[in-house]
Amino acid sequence: MITRHSVAQKILSYLNGELMLAELVDWAENTFIDDTLSPDEAIDMLNDILAYLAAADSADFPLTWEIIRDWLERLGHPVQTVIA
Image (cartoon, rainbow, N blue to C red):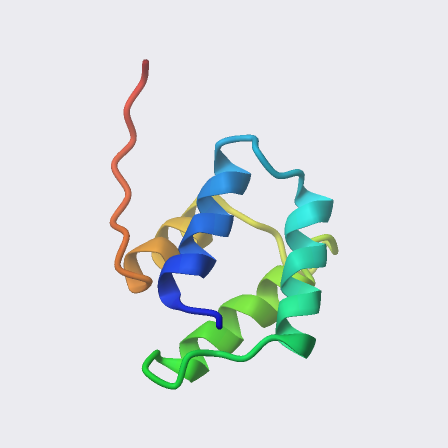
């Protein structure tokens, strides 16, 4: 079952270098096709994010910081940048 939290976790794994872009795209493609979105979630929003992520390996769908930050905020995970 795909939820806001599970999508946010995948995006955060990508940002933290735990997933390569190809792995994130593959996950989104397979999730978009095969997995069930939680009926308690904002299905249209999750579909929009998954569809974009599934195409993120093309020049037409770049994963910019602004896009990712907006998604995370919409998913309920506000972003704060900290330099360690």
